[in-house]
Amino acid sequence: MTSLEILGCRLDAIDSGEATRRILDEAREGSGAQIVTLGTEMVVYAQRDARFRDIVNACELSLCDTVGLLTVARRRGARLRERVTGVELLSISARVRRRWDFRFISWAARRASQPMRPRF
Image (cartoon, rainbow, N blue to C red; front, side):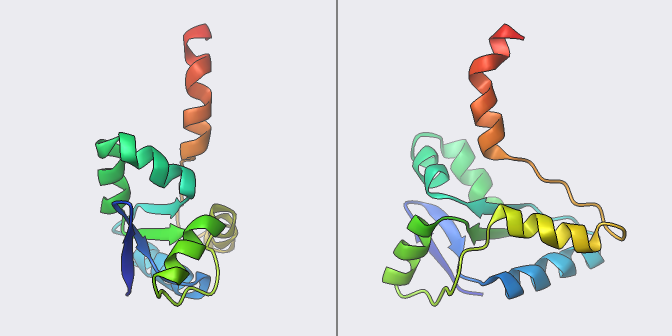
């Protein structure tokens, strides 16, 4: 698998078909896997938070979720045909949900809710 680094964050240059195959392989093995659909805002945030960057880089798959990262990857020579979004991963999980347990944690939702936490 081809990977590249964008501002310190690893990005795996694979399309949705290969991502689906890898995710299903991980599910069959039962070992569990952490997968990130990497977005431009996450790469920017990782510049300020080394722990977050380490978590992103430790994921089994780091998939291209935004047009900005797709453009940078292509300009660096990656042969990425498409983005692989979190929504696409949800559709993958819907197809196999009866056989495996998929859990999705939304980084953006968690970050967006932080200003509200002191109130509740």
